[in-house]
Image (cartoon, rainbow, N blue to C red):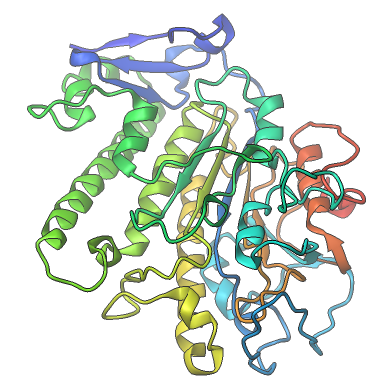
Length: 459
């Protein structure tokens, strides 16, 4: 038998009045999205959320950036280099009238995204190019503000925002990573984008089952593997209290949670099967890459939808780390994205496929967010700032200039969407972060090495 709980241990009364948990036998707990029929006090404007989708190794510019489809394929350079381009776009904000080949998966949600070009980061000499571009992506501390590390790394944007908007959520932040490999080829600076402060990493969860257990609090036992089997076995008793619209929302949410669990089970069975194989690479290299990314993304969305957290980061893969991955639907065997990026002349077509593959996973998550209705009739995407980005502008030249950035969602209507903003050359990436802080209601005048907000993005 299940009971509808309007409370959560250790949380304040206001939060109790805005969140519902279903609690069943064995201590299993399931958070629910906002349901009008349960008569909870919902804010007239949903709380804004913040999320990041980080892609390693940069992109192939000729597929991602407009006007560069015929640009010369760059040669590999071992250090950070800016490559010249003849594709000079006019500075300013204009409609996003056409998507580039790599961006094409975003076509169904084009009016909900904004493409930002011209943003750059400075490179502080003395550290590895890949390590700095990943670990400092959300920080970009000024070159003289951190003297205890070779990395210009301070408290990252996700934690700065969480300090202001996540004081009443069960989890201040959620850090997820799609690097399940146990072969620690690189330091933590290659494999983490979220940091409490210099030298203090916010560890990410890489195992979907661990992420699920942490968020939904299920006490898993062998006899009852699925939390939904424990909690929703008598769901009809709750459904009787719901309106038709809420029943549909409840059914959609139930199906999404069930799908997450079934996908976790499938992944675990596949991993066991792969462990029996005699292969040169670790068995994890053969796990379907897209399924892994979407599964972790689904868990992130469920946490944002139910108010378990307002701030989340998803690192699609580590920087450099040459352990291969199985990009299902693209290649017959695992490949190393990083190694391929060093020889664009030879692998240009395959690299373009990988870039589009990553964009397909991002587009899937954006579309899913846009399908989830909130209390005031808007969608989860409408109330989220969800940024796709990489710390490199190009994987072969390791350039820190003109980074690939796409922002989905408007954060409660505070950011313009359906636009392409081309910033003046060498505009700091931190200008975008400061703009997003302002859209989240944080009125700080600076962040890291910012020179000012991108005012044309704000409504």
